[in-house]
Length: 112
Length: 113
Image (cartoon, rainbow over all chains, first blue to last red; front, side, top):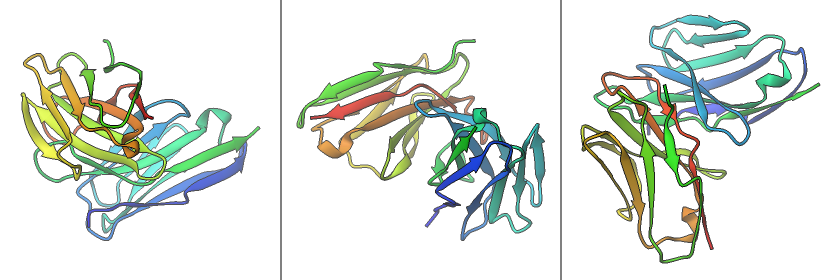
């Protein structure tokens, strides 16, 4: 179907280490969005990628969209305790509307 | 600018009852979507409303329904509640034209006893 698979499900890192979460689809994605949900909070939009091979950076966060538009990744350099939360990728249907299909999320825990 | 507001924040119901959840989008946003979040199934799309019309619908039974008013506020109704309906229900709003970032509210935590 239209699933997006996200790995890993959980990741423990020591503060200062890097972190990467991957999002994969069996079908071509027209776009991919990334969200962060802090514990007890709600998803917060981080970025949207639409172009093949696109790379976008937000401070220590680097987002990539694969050349074939079937995968995406989020990389955090030198994690901090404020990075704790669950990171979700989501695809939007390529038609009118805003129906998002979310990946299962990667829960990031950072040890100080 | 005020964010997306959802009421109530917490709700406890028993099986068989019905419930109505409310969502006020960001001013100027015409699209309102509803999502169910559970530990087992993750974030699942329920439906989207735009200009008072349901534009997209997820794979949920007919017990789940919604509507949108002329001021873009939206309500979601769940009838004949089941234990499995216990979840965090999130509302998200966006401008509505094209594929837009979704702005989520804090959600309504629904517990079914």
